[in-house]
Image 1: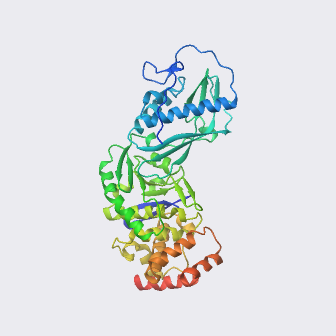
Image 2: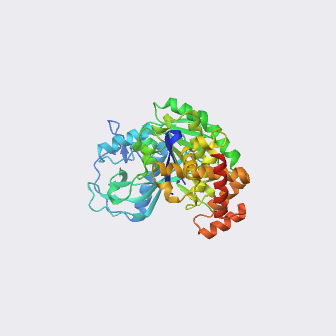
Image 3: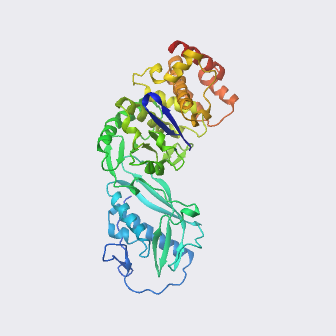
Length: 444
């Protein structure tokens, strides 16, 4: 899913959207490893001569077992067991980062934390520094679920390199495979200690020092979920995870490396979507570390309701659907009970209508990839379109139009006309003509 950003002048910030069991602890056998005296990763109890190369099945079982120990250590908050899974010969910087990671995870409630090994998807690690008996780089997924937000676990790829010393396998690195195109996903816990605040309808994941902003988010989260649910008729989890990073680098890790995080206030993302089964995993609203703090209470409320609308409707939204529909509907819900008039919320459109007349066509998708005034205008036009349909045909018809067009994905112009006739009784030309009359009347 490709996120789309916008800058809303009257909000004073950009808003972006992406149309995106506990286990018992089992310690490593004492005959294999013991904690180092300085508290570092487990070290061999004695000299172990290199073991012969093991068969693939045995190697898979051994690494899978080691990852299971690692996951159990996270869930049981057992630092010694966690560090015992790390290669004693690993880079000290990696060991220190892993120690910080474990500490940072302490405040996060997980329903699930496990690893999934894909032994049939292995990288060739010839050329990597090798002081181990064997190096191995199979694909690994982290599978986790945030308590209070995730009804089903989500999966993220981890670029893990494993090393064997004697008969024992360890985690050697989570960055050595970067140059081979297999990178480790970084969560909020990779950056700083996490603080989780829980509400009836979700959680806010932040870092120490963000308490004033977290309080604002906690106050608005439940009412925003309820406001979206009052409009959107299809059942959804009504559970939301708001992530408040501390830096642009952290936000970029959470939403994607190519996203312009410096110019947005919020991004709605999802890890996995199955439209046929109507399931979505890993939905998050990621907030800008700086931009969101500049919003007024009213603006923050609109932003949250806009983004949460994308979460609620995501299972019914096929990638490639008209952007004017997706963003216009989310804005309609965001502004619905705000008291903001069209002229106040769409000043660029109002000026354009008064000077040059209303638009002559529906906003094109390319306009939502632009910047500045063209991007502003595209969002304002989309919102006004949604308001027009709701005012002229009724809110239920607006919802029906969204479900029909957004559920179809990319279609031809003639197919779009057919679907609009089914719902509104007019084609694109009729929709634009009615919209033009509406804008002339409302923005005169």
